[in-house]
Image 1: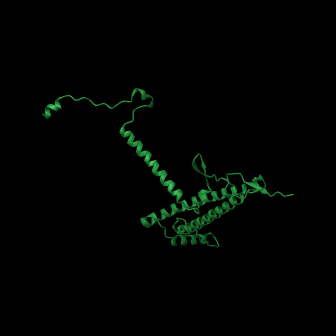
Image 2 (image 1 turned 30 degrees about the horizontal axis):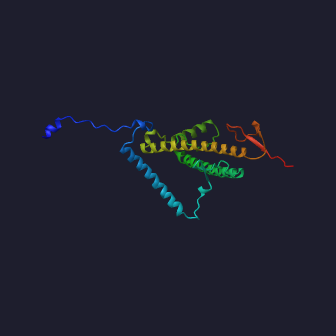
Image 3 (image 1 turned 135 degrees about the vertical axis):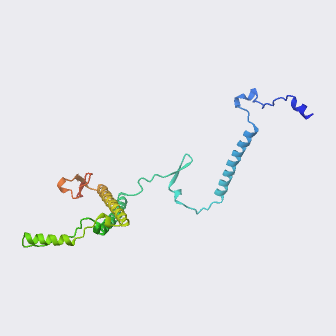
Length: 229
């Protein structure tokens, strides 16, 4: 009997369309569309209810700085523009503190470069220390030169262990990197000093080449304080 029932063709059930009188409202809403719309609606209502409860139970003495550092623009909170937050004197003071930090780092790097150079001094092929011998004539000078050459023990690259070679190469690379950092810090310090001078009051003029003590790539200006009358 079941096989016979399945053999009989069944009519295809179609969804009810929007009536012609309500066609101006668009496609007829189905149940699944209603469920999604109802969930979204109740979610918004619950959020509004929580906000109403928070507003009703708020602390009147509560304060935080965004209350005075933000404003509402078309219902949206926007932070207040703080471009002119600091005065000119405060900006100059902050620039001075930054310059002091850069100068401190520059001096520290210079000391490290000097210490590293002194450590690598003995590893060079040509030592900087030298003895001066005085001779009465050329023959005595030749004898002294011969004695001095016999005393010297030439050190070849094969006598130095590979571990020491690698360590020396790393030290030389570190020395070059620190020298590069010193030059960069000097450039930054000079630029900050120029920016600080540009922020000062008074009439400015461009320095002549003979007046420049520490020349840089940028123009240097000199100020002369104007007398107030």
